[in-house]
Image (cartoon, rainbow, N blue to C red; front, side, top):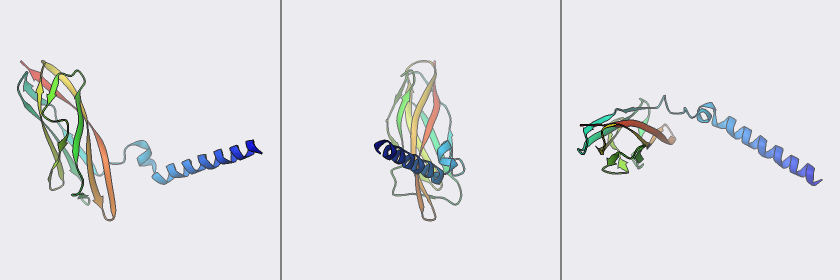
Length: 146
């Protein structure tokens, strides 16, 4: 009896999870659920070692979608793999310009060479009655020159 109950509960749970994944849709499962909505444009920053440069990342919201003005759009968790870059701020709020979220942060390379930068960008948008908040990975570099 106990074994049959356990099996029934297990099957019910697995069925629920399968239905939940089906309801979410293939886009969410694959992790590619924002390319038709958002476009991330970020280029490497270059500065002399010990001097301040500027890293700019822009997220463009496609036509038909609106900026969720009440949301705290931000770039955060900034780090360099080799710890050879200093950031003016670890959390940067977006400046919203029409359909663009623009993130600007000062960076100072502490060593010559190419230094991989990682971070996260979080933005909110809407279409019709649907509000969505997404997190985008940021992967660029800061190049320190002599």
